[in-house]
Image (cartoon, rainbow, N blue to C red):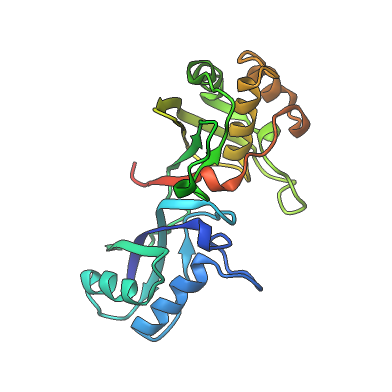
Length: 248
């Protein structure tokens, strides 16, 4: 059996997240359909994470085992032939037998893009958050630095009946808020992310932009372990899974 790692990208505007849905199109569904047409079966597919409806991926990783002998380069081209234009396989590579796309992941990087202009850009609809009030990106960057290090992120995640137990500690390795013209980008890398963690961090940073929260308040919100103390959950369309990190 071969263990293959597939790296792909997709436009979340056209999907209801990665995971199979009963009444909506998901990335996993179109990937499995393409894979079946190429190798004739649908193996047990391991995705690197879940993504919500409307969230994009510049890099998403999938692993599965197969006894099919198709070369990796040919599999890449064949899958892209059957995938919709909104998703593409970037490469396929062989991995050791025990490799797992999710459990061998050492970290991820997300970016959140904000179009900071009074006038919306029609070509960015569904790909950015349009925020028309002036953002002081340097102030937001100072606030963002309070997330660096290992913290309990209970205040910055959505907890449902499936997520009441477990470890809510995560280590943020890098975080920055930058501006390029009217585009403000929030970039965050961590060893793992909780449900809605990035979107709640973004919503809280926008509360800082509005003057409702001060940069120093981030430490207090983290210590509170209370979701109600943080800002709102930012919309999904500005969020991108940007990098999946493997290795030592």
